[in-house]
Image 1 (cartoon, rainbow, N blue to C red):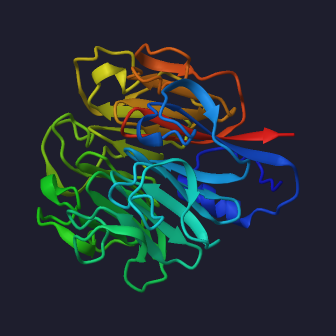
Image 2 (cartoon, helix red, strand yellow):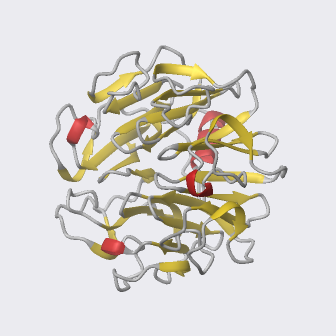
Length: 385
């Protein structure tokens, strides 16, 4: 089986995809996909609709990247193929029908997919040639196809070959091009598109004129967060719970810097909260703290409108904000979870909510994690045989 080295430090999903594509295949490491939590609509990919409170392997040993949406999921394999499963009622699985799938099904036959993002009833992906493709429900224009017609198989967004990353949110999408420009489309309510407007857009519109954006995360709620190449963090959109990190609850329709630091490495926006990791390996969270989703062991009735450090550790490498729970990986390859756990999405074999991170099992080979918007979790583990 193909192998790529265990990278130390902080990696975004896009960087992982680029590293994976560039790696020399020599070894026997297997890339196993695991899921746990709410199994409704087959979203766990385990060929049933049963809840699981601890990680269970989802077929195959060659997974590259995975993205958990609300009820639908998407993933790529190391051979560049695209796979989807879960709810399919609006064509969000991209396999040319509207049928739920309780186990992964290949979307088309191409082997050129490099990055994928599952949103709420829609998804987007980038190919190795830099083209951008979308499918699913576009009721607010979030597919970027200049209409609001459901699409049950991937359709190219324009003709450009310069897309590098896409992030599908609740009702809007954000993406970055290879020239460092930032683009958004879909529902514009609360200013979530960042273009200083609340008018929906059914095709990509540039967010400002800057060319130094490096990573973006469109929330399943109504806000967006992004990091620039200089390490600064920016946010915009809905802010009722302080999820923009501005020390207030003021809605903003264009990017506003979060503090003055230049050490932000990765950000994940979901629901009404945001989590991020700095280059020093510390993890931070802010916004709605219901069910302890911020992981800061604070009063769950109190929201936080500016970043608060999660513990004191400096060994965090990746974080994924879920609907009301969080997942993260440390540099030692261990997996951690916190927040709402009624459906077992913390993966610790119970349904108890926790306000600070707890380790999921004892494995030290987790490489990528994605928390869903609707009470489930997905992760990839590197298993050496």
